[in-house]
Image (cartoon, rainbow, N blue to C red):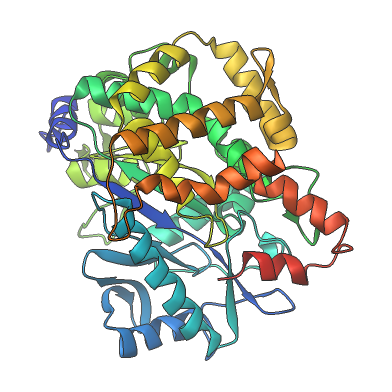
Length: 458
C-alpha cells in the first residue's frame, strides 16, 4: 500500500508560499467567436476555424505552442501571456500580471487588435458578450484531447445532464464567456479579507457589468443569463453558510474545497488505466485514499492542483485570488473591470471599509439578492436600497482608491481613467450594459442582431 505524504499541511504551505508584498493585477478575457454578420458558430477544425487562427498567430506573431494534441494546438505562449482554449475551441487571453493597469490595458489592446486582424482573414469575428446570443449550446463545437482532462469533463457533464442533475452544465461550459481578474494577498489575514469581500460583493459586481441578455436569438428574460446559467450549472460550488460566516482563513477555504467532489485524476499504471474516479469528496480522498488496481492511492500535489481547477466558484483561491464573475464585454469597457477591482481591494481604506460592511450582512439576505440579480440586475432591492445605489457607491470608492494610490502614464493619467466607460453606464444611463442592450435591441434596433454584433465586436 502506497501512502502519499501530501496532506492539509502541504496545502497550507502552498497558500503561505503565495503571500506577496507586491500588488500584481492579472486579467483573463474570454469572448464569443462567430461568423460575421450572420452569427453562425465557428468550428475549431477546418481551414477557417479557430485552429487556423492559432496557426497564423504562430507563423506571423511570435506565439509559441506550449500544448498540443497531435497537430491540434491547445495552448500558446508569448512572453508571460498565454492563449488558452475554451471547451468549444474559442481563444482566451490570460494576460501577464502587471503592477500597473496601464500595462495590463496595453497588453489587452495589442491582443484585441491582432486577434481582430488575424481572425478577419478567416471570416471570424469576436464578440465581447457574456453568452452566445444566437447559437444554442447543442450547435457549438466541443474540443476533445484524446482522453485527457477535456474529455473527462465532457463525460462528467454528460453524465450529470443525463441523470437530470444539471441541465445547464452544457450551456455553462460552451455558451458563456467571462472576464477574470487576479490579485495578490500579503498574509493570511489579507487573504481572508480580500476573499470574503470578493465573494460577498460578487453578485453586485455581476449586476454592474452584466452583458448577457440573449439566448437562442431572443431576449432570455434575464438581464444576466450567464449568471443564471452559472448559478444553475455550478450550484454545488456556491458560497456555503459555513464559509460565509467564517474569516476565510486558509483552513476555512481548505474545508470548503475538501467538501467538494473529487472528480478524476490521472495515473500511470501497468494496466493503462489513465484516470481514477474517487467517487468521494476530496477530503475523504485525502484521508482514506481510493482503491486503484491492487493498491490504495492517495492524492498527490498534482491531484490537488487538478482539484483546484475544478472548483468553479465565484472566487478561486490558489496562490492568487481570482474573481471570475464578470460577463465578457466590448473591448472599450474591458479595462473598467480590473480597474474597478484594483481600486477597491488594493486600497487599505477601501479594504477595511468594505470588510466592515459585508460583515454586517446575513447569509439569508445575501442569498436572496444573489437569486434576484440574474433577472432584475441593478434594480434588485438589497437592504432597502437598489443595487444600483450600491454600484454607484462602489464605483466612487474604486475611483478614490485608484487616485489615492496614484500610478500615472506618460500623459499624466492615473488608473481611474479606465473606470470612465462603466461609469457612463451606471451614472449617466443608470443601467448596466445589458439593460442598455435590451433597450436598444427592443427599440431602435427592431430585434435585429447585426447592431448587437457591431456594438460587441472586437
